[in-house]
Length: 240
Image (tube, rainbow, N blue to C red; front, side):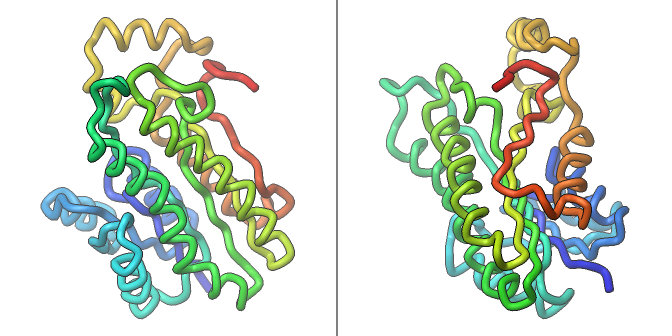
């Protein structure tokens, strides 16, 4: 029977690529989104993947959203915590709302969504959770104290939850993408983008499919001995 996968932020950018990759591998995929109904519906019509709108930063909304998905598709076997936003600015100029918004959407969402599916995974003795971190959670980035803190927190969250799930057939891993050719990165000024690419040893930006292939592997049966790990997919820009 096909496994059910939930991808948060799953209708655009890296999330879209992950949703499609899992669909093509035979999963029944639910793609979560936060607000752009028109774009989400276009994605669903193009891919055949059902979409579910709920705020991943809201614990009650996640519980309701997961219940709707499981009623439609069945118990969730695979969770990809991909949803994320930026509210960049140096600390001395950052308002409290910009901090709270990023921590809530990028980090608290990992708790909310994992908490909503973990009991079912424990009961079935199977689960795959992949959390999307960032190269900037590993090495920091000027003007991103909120984003870097959230993404760094994801890496710690991954290691702790992996220890809890290991004896229950649940693996928990993270992927730390480098700079990927998405709308978010393309919004960077051209000269800044050129300098970023200059620092990537392979000489190019990543693609969303580079990240999606990593997710596909970590959620496969063949990856059942890998847990608590962070897979860095960054073209060699940051190595440790």
